[in-house]
Image (cartoon, rainbow, N blue to C red; front, side):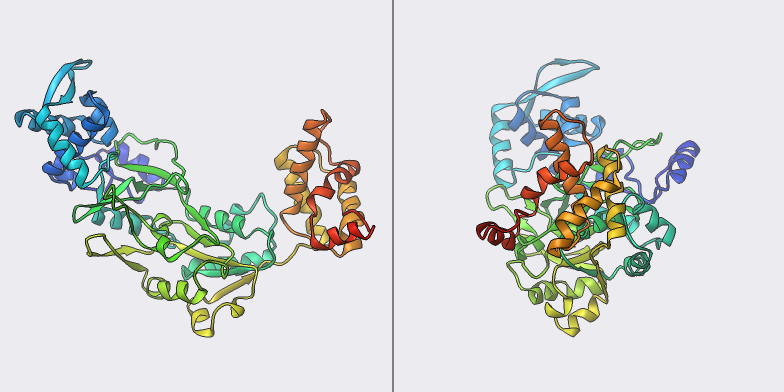
Amino acid sequence: MTTLSPPTTDTSLLSLLLSGERFWPTEPKCAHDLGLSETFLDTMVAKLLLSSGSVSGRGIATELCLPFKITEAALERLRNRRLVTHVGSSSFNDYVYGLSDEGRSRAQSFHGSCSYIGPAPVPLDDYVISVEAQATGEDPIRRGELSDSFQDISIAGDLLDLLGPAVNSGSGMFLYGAPGNGKSTLADRITSCFGQEIWLPYAIIDGGQIITLFDPAYHRAAESPNATTDWDARWVRVSRPTVVVGGELTMENLEIRHDSVTHVSEAPLQMKSNCGCLLIDDFGRQRISPEALLNRWIVPLENQVDYLTLANGKKLQVPFRQLIIFSTNLAPSDLVDEAFLRRIPYRIELTDPDEEEFHHLFQIAANTIGCYYDPDGVDHLLNHYYRPFNRPLRRCHARDLLLQIKHYCTYNELPFEMLAEHFDRIVGGFFTEIETLGNRRSGGPAV
């Protein structure tokens, strides 16, 4: 069973304390430490052999993320019941195992009840402990920490003064303003303020129901920790998640989704974002109304717990411990009424940059993408393609325009430079606005 007191030796204690660990999934020594029954372990081994054919004992242990000693005990139990047989020898005093005819029949029955094959799941209670220990907001961030997270992007000091208290409140926030001004980037950087990495189980089990949690679409596996203490391989170390969803969000995404064919469930988005950030992008344009979405989250936002329903009807209480950011191009008051706004008290507008900041954004983008910053090129862009058309400046334009110049130069075997003539070449395909098309038809400017 997972514990909050990670070390077993003075060396590992010092190592973990220096690394700032608040949670450590200790390596299980026996089936009891897993929080799983021996019968459940036997069925997992049988299903793996049914799927993979002949596998060595250590190969099974690796696939199920279990210590070899525990896997070996499960294999011995299955052999005693004549469900598994030795089909060959392997290295390191190991054997290659396969199913008997009776074992194959039993494994097919197990597979029909639940076809999950993969890392052994972690009990729900252990997952709850992990979230409470690693959740955002446990240690309030300071201005310096927030500033460090934004050091390679442009952000005004007054915006930092608004973001910091909102992040520490843990109550969520609205970020609103024109598209392209960095709302998604802000969410990702805010997540990094809470620490770089967390432990996450591949899957959770409660009442015999398996819920997959690790999702490569949102969770980036980190390098193995540099500590002398072993850990429970059923857990993976990941970067703190920033889960971004937009207009595709439906109410089904916020509930446990059960596959009636495999009998395996999948965690909802808010569980996948625990200990990180959940960004509802383009809020107000989902297929569900803003009122329905906020109604769903009134209790979780206030109590930091969510209530979900398993396929068998059982209710689960799970942590709701992430920073929720609602990003929208509309004013929050146009989307929801005052009662909802009280529950999300921080509303922060991201305005367009001025010309001085626009130059700074190009300087940052040039350093990142790999070219020399040329202020004359930016002035040319402003003089010819922004001011004459009253075109608004956006924070994303510097990066996006330079990337197009880079692709243009690569294609034409030219040095990558921020030159006025390069801007002239690419702006026609970059600024595709409705009024531009109208100008072209009437013989007006071609940008």
